[in-house]
Length: 209
Ligand code: CO
Image (tube, rainbow, N blue to C red; front, side, top):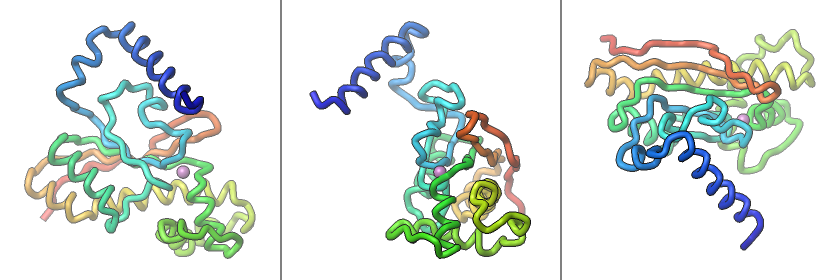
């Protein structure tokens, strides 16, 4: 067998063994229904698997990941995930998780500063490039080439921006109006340098006339 895929298949066998050691009915219980408590909208970055970094078992977190954890109202994919989470999985806790040292955030800054090109990816990163360009006062005390500090600020700002977008989505407003339920929206940021996950902002959403 191909070595690359063999590594994953063997890993899967170990995962099954270890999981059954802790709970012999684990897979049986999960097989008929999924009732995750959380929706996680995070970055595709391979260093940030939602359930692993929060020490949760499969079945707890419904996940959507894309480059730089964006909620773009034109993205049919993220909208479908949100719709399914709210109406069918009845999830009430939504997490938007960004991270420091995000390649997507760094690329957006370099595109805005006209220092590097990223080809097709520039389409996807356009909203973040604009977020950078429209908030220059936030980074004015940093040198233009201080990418570490600028990108930290922009990673946080991006999470707050995506939270705003979530709240404004017509499908979310419609859901709140129809169901009169509340939703808990959490903005978080993960530091790949020390593995720490931190809460940036918390909002309770409910229908208002
Ligand atoms: Co990233």
